Length: 475
Image (cartoon, rainbow, N blue to C red; front, side, top):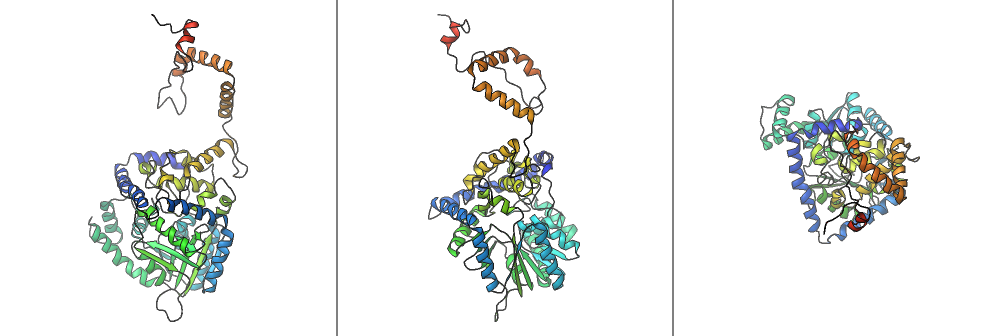
């Protein structure tokens, strides 16, 4: 599994907030893609109804995952492919490693894949002495820098062109330049030999189609086509929820995926792969392997409160509108998935208690739901995670905590339901306000002032206060 550092969220967020270059880069991304996606939805011929339809379709897929996965596996095998259901990250990694050993793999090229980040396949292959090269330009940049992606579709958004120029100078030996076309050409020349010499190509899967037994891969660079056709072995790693029932549904969702991700009507390259190279064809691998990854998704599927998150098609649209992500970037989240979707799915996959800062750090503004191409209600699930964190859950192995806080809220609830006690407490609170304002309250008084209680309560009319001798008005 990839490195997990979600407990460092507060420290990493504080560091990111003081990075002006990161803020500028993220603002530019959100101005272009966040606003662009909303405009792209408005221009859909079907209008907003298409997104409502997509939500219902995805929920149907989630409810019928067992049947869809079985059908997909059967149809891929009928076309000469191999299918392996991996219960966890270790099982998926072991499958790839055993395949690489048996086939004598020395070099691997990769398309951008968040599931491969999730299971940490690069580290496992490199520890075996196998050369791994990321071929998406953004992924290639951060691999050279020894970092992890900071965005689902723009993994190197936190890098300036000057950063990349210096990085290329020290790693691939070109003279320093900050000219983007020159840098892109240098990466292209460097990667070309890696494509030609690779024994295995590894990709993710945007959406699979059970009906046809194929996977769809979307890119804007063409690197995925080279990664899937030139090596003799192609391995695709797919989260088990990334599946459609029919080809029509797959095409509908791909239209929305591209709008949500990059405000495009369709990605520059959309590839449909249904198995190894057929007889008489020149292009394609000798072997095709699809790994269907669970790694905690079955547990999410079993919970009616959270199974909606499995509708996600990983467009990254929620990152492009989130005010929190816009200020702290993706590395702060400490796992493969960042932004609002990461704040929900990461705790569910890795532990609600360990990743508590993620869902407690979101604003609940609702922008993520507004921009989601399939209308996932992430704010509802963020609140549900906070509830579990506070109240505990046997299903998610979370104990009730903060006994004093629970007692305080219980006492407050009792006051609120007993008016005479409440009124007495308010009067006492008003008398003690000067003392309360001087008390050191952790997490509050270092950053903000404690307000004093008003002399007159909102529910008290001037007439009622006159009868008690308070707040008299002259005539």
